[in-house]
Amino acid sequence: MEFVTESNSNDSDGSGGVIVGNDEQLGMDLDLDVEESAWAKWVDPQRHAAQARKFLQRAELPALPPEPWDFESDEASQINDVVAELFPDIEAMYLPDNADLVDQLVCFTGEWFVKYLDAQWIDIAKYKDMPSGYNDCGDKHFYPGIEPGIAFKFEGWKTCSAEFLTEYIIENEFISIIELVSVSFWRLRKEGAPSFSEARQDFPYHPPFM
Image 1 (spheres, helix red, strand yellow):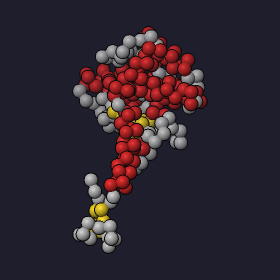
Image 2 (tube, helix red, strand yellow):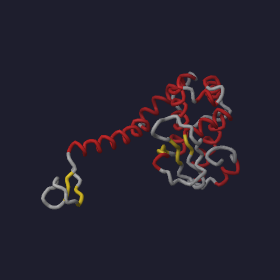
Image 3 (spheres, one colour):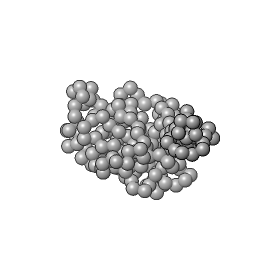
């Protein structure tokens, strides 16, 4: 595709406009492709599923079940133990050698919200006008050029960045996420599509309500 702008330059098409050269346009297209492919590659559902499987294998567990585990289940305890072993503190998450492990945890955590609560991943970097309170971690970023965040369809549920969710898990245990998702999953199916205003009361210190 060629872009035409108004100009008196000699590089015109005879109609008073300037045609951007093919090489210049190619450079513009390549820049756009790089930007789009970085996010498209990261958010690919098959990639997320593969990373989540790797994390489950570390806990010697099969694929996620059709319904979420109870937060008091053996499976929940096994996941909790793996997270504690891999990430004894928040600093461990930002070590370069742990980048793939962190990505596995991020994808696994996201699968809980996507699979059971119909959430979706968004690139927060594209929503700079998003109001405060979407739970980011300032200048801390796992992924160069993109800022993954989980967005919910329920009123009052804030978008949570990948960094915020994982820091919360390290400080409060993964069981907290399992409890929130499990309770919300059953409420959603028993009550249709509630606003989950009661969830904010039951889980005031959990994402996505903090």
